[in-house]
Length: 68
Image (cartoon, rainbow, N blue to C red):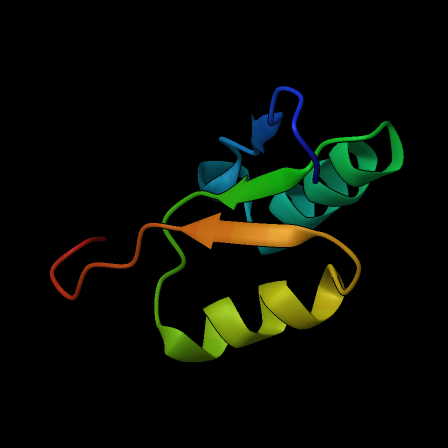
């Protein structure tokens, strides 16, 4: 990331499942997104798995303990 705009791509796919969220995240990273926003991981273990599946891109997530 440099001085230009930062591109953050939201997966918005958690309702379709973790595999779809990761698939979208990889696609966004492949086309140049600087940050992939992982929508609502269900728990810390899911967030770790999502992050491991997207090793070469910055990630952002919203993890709250009462979310479903």
